[in-house]
Image (cartoon, rainbow, N blue to C red; front, side, top):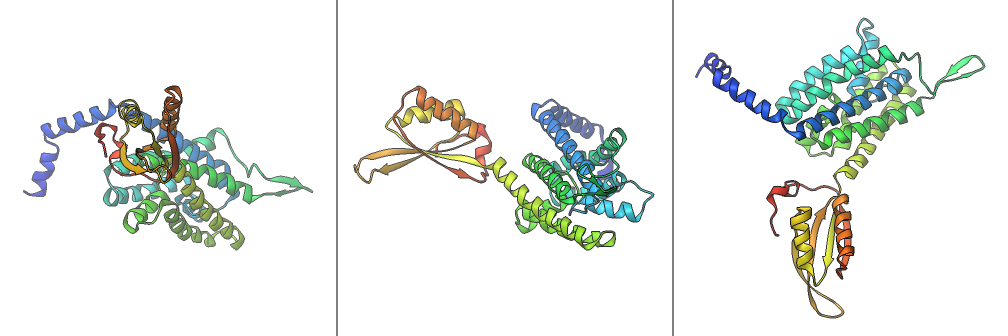
Length: 323
């Protein structure tokens, strides 16, 4: 089949109708609108971090925004928002080709709204300099460390929220996701590597001390991002020994809607055989389980630990099975 034939089939009435049905089904889901709201709020927070803290301080933290600041100063006839938009369009193509359609589609939305959001903030809240700058003997003295810390914390929080729903803020996050996928490096370290390389472009417009501050900010961004991601993705692994394990098993499967793994254990002191339940829960679900054990007065021995990440069927409550 020729390319022309493939193209004509792509736009055939039946294929167009099928695509429209798929889009309609997606728009009808609650998940779509919740994630859209999360992405919009997350990007607005990131835009505030860039506009209120990064741009006034003239710091070039390792990010596409930082690279855009360099280009905008070298080419003063274009705005920072416009440069961000252009670079993100290029990187978005890479996200579709190298990462996947879901990540690419979500990042299309988040990346394309960042530049306009920054320009919008500039129109309604003009900034002449850093909000942390002070007047001393008639001279304005800025404190780039405060700007750096505020920006990094805000950006890391935004990144971690978006990564958790398989989206991103665009730009550097796309490069970090590519490094994460193909080299197996965690996202925080990937952000540091990609950001460090970009940060070095600031030597073209900034003093060495400001570039060093930017590199430190990039390193902090990776550390804080890893911390946020660990906190968001972590789950509680619960071990329960109880003679009434069937009641607990029934509650977890039918009310909390999680799977249970049973282990036969022998007490080292009593030499009695018992059943131990192993369950992976969110913090909220763990609270419900402990409330149930107290309400039903079920004698039990409970221990917990934290699991940093969970993959596989645990995320699909419709596919529960007894392990």
